[in-house]
Length: 144
Image (tube, rainbow, N blue to C red):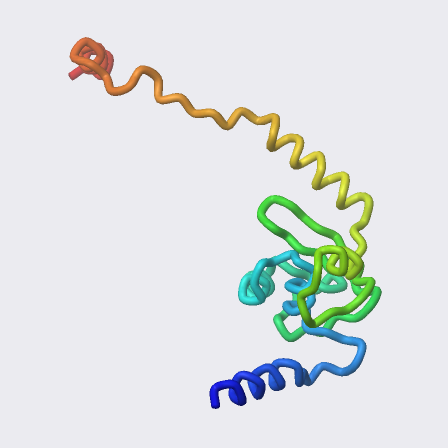
């Protein structure tokens, strides 16, 4: 009984209203493995992190081959050209064939990664909490 309901739900998911040769941008980003879940892809699109052909995209925006997609993930900026379409998530090899990244975008992301690695992110607390002597020096310094 539940099996029939499950199959009916799967059939509804496959029955997109998208014309042949076009896929929703949120589905494509998920299928291309830029996001782990489709809801995360939807949030990114709704948050203005995705542009298609230079315009801010909505979830239902349809992408097709040769469209330009600009995606911001944290500090990284991806500039992609859609090469193939997929509405289902497949292997990583298939996902990499769905898009082509511009050389400029690749070099910018790599330099950003190198800069992030080279910055000193270590934070030291010093020697811990101030002792009695340190507190007295602070009081004298503040003029209390």
